[in-house]
Length: 165
Length: 165
DNA sequence: CTGATTGCAAATGCTTTGCACGCCA
DNA sequence: TGGCGTGCAAAGCATTTGCAATCAG
Image 1 (tube, rainbow over the protein chains, first blue to last red):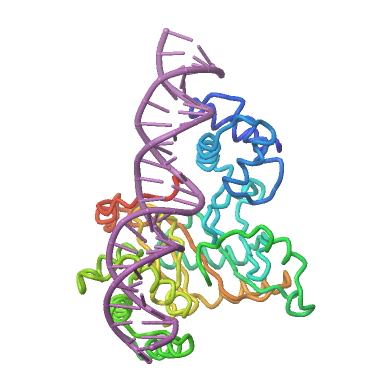
Image 2 (image 1 turned 180 degrees about the vertical axis):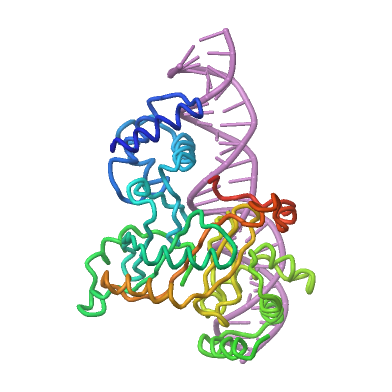
């Protein structure tokens, strides 16, 4: 786990007078062992592989704490389950691009966009706290080659969409 | 109801060979009688005032159809319930600004932002289908005057947030 | 010690669905 | 008349919560 994250977590634990438990340590380790988005259920399964005891409830509760500590951010990818993104510590203002064809999620940062949206916000008399941009896209790969490399893998996960689009 | 919406709806009904029922007509009327966002439950209550018979299930099913017809769009305001936005026909590319203090939602359109995000999308090898920007903000009114006019009204609705932030 | 944390199971809340009946085309 | 649409109640599903036992500090 990156040093900055550990630092921020320590501060949070001290400030809120939280206790260090094996479950929490393990969950945090798993969360920051990769930079991919995940759902509570996916995290639960990954944690279970490390420790067959930890409960779903503890996973949910710890997720809540990490969001509160601003180490994790909830993102809306249009599915019925909430997704969590562990990359906001490294890239505080990144956004997401979701491929409608294959479900792939790409992160991007762009200062111009940030400046532009902040400009709009101030013009309307508000102060930006946080912004989230989701761009739904079509895969050029699919259009040009007739198939998208991520397509099959995604289909197999068979996630239920919250909505038909 | 605006003529363009009626037209689009008629096309959709014909194309999908749907039937016109009193329930659907009433729901559609209520949906487009205002330009405010609403949840399924709020819509159900408004419909019930017109016709005490229509069921929750029919409201949900009709909402699905209207989304499919692209007459309504689901938006994520950070609450546990999905919100529906009836203004995408008039303003196809508008976005939302949500006040953290009072919960007020302001819509905005900005061509510069659209151009900028589309630029990013193409640079990454994708084609924009749809984008949604949510900017969470603080109310300048609250900061300057110590209170925000919408605050009390919002508090009273007491909506549960999907997440603590 | 003492209160924070955990696991379990039950509860919650929004949304979807199976089914029998009714109604539009 | 055929089968789409409806209402009802039950089911689904992700998430939250009450509670008694356990554990960290």
